[in-house]
Length: 215
Image (cartoon, rainbow, N blue to C red; front, side, top):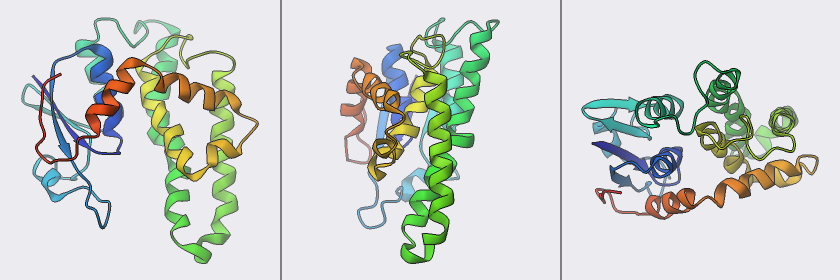
């Protein structure tokens, strides 16, 4: 049995979405954020030493890191769904997007969020960070082009992984401010319209620690 330890409004929303897309049976434990700090609660430390989410239990095995969890779940339970054939050229692109999302794309977005909290002290850094954000959006936009999805124009777990990059940009207005990349906004809306995404969104909004249920 799979058990997802899910922190509300976090990266673990992608794993919840993945489980819904694959139609897997799972248990869900939802952890609210601290109302004052917005940090994860200390209870997550009892699950994983870093106290972060997502963490997925798979028959006694503890899995962490979004990209790794997605890779493992799709290989173990996907039955050929949500990923290209491993011996195809498209699979190389699929693996690239799984790692690019957190390894490269999220870095300037996180820097932008943290520097924004510094006020005037962070002002000298903002032009450089903004330039990097735009650089990455340009790269994603160019790779997507006029297609609906990133890999072979077919929805895959790579799209699930990349969704958080664009979602993280929206609260800051960064995505809307780059009018040169209208395909990114349309892409995100396309992902959000998927029934499995909507189901995951509703389940992930539970707010009581220990709320648990099966799919």
